[in-house]
Image 1 (tube, rainbow, N blue to C red):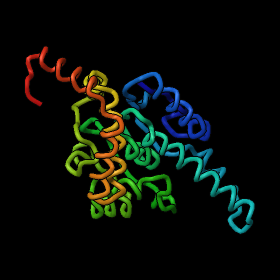
Image 2: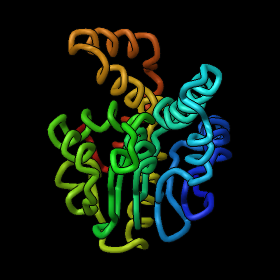
Image 3: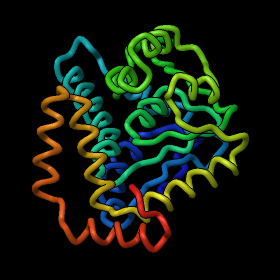
Length: 247
């Protein structure tokens, strides 16, 4: 489980730099990562200190323009580390999930939230196009039309609506039941064959960016190279011992 507070659940520069290192270490030690905020909110957006650092840059100067590009690329890669992580990443959302929060959860594999959580793709209201992954990942999750509505209007929407548009797959009446649900999911995933789970995540991401034919060929090669008779027999024996003879 991965949980930490940065300020009031805002994401500052230290967080952006540290996140890939934390994820890299965790994927060596655990089978599932649950990402949550410890305060009143999951994420209220990018820290104002980061925004001030951006505003201090002079877009008319080449050096400052390059610094801005490097900053954005670093933050993009930080969030992408969640997507590239070998093990499943589960987002547990409560309170507000604004701006960078949407960037983060769309890079996760599974998203749960409380019914009263409040989401918003806020960037257009502060004079920006979202540039850390939301505009690239959200359409694959909700469909282009819904993603366009949310990104262009920057409107608030609840956890209940987020479930209706498939941004989250389960909602819970309160924070404690959300945490219980995420814990149960993590335990369930951790008990499965780790290579099958990791392979499924990898193939899903590959298939998202490629054609169906390419995805089918890729998974055939993947299973040919990595699937072992012993691990299949182990899983079948486990299911048989639990009284489940069918897949």
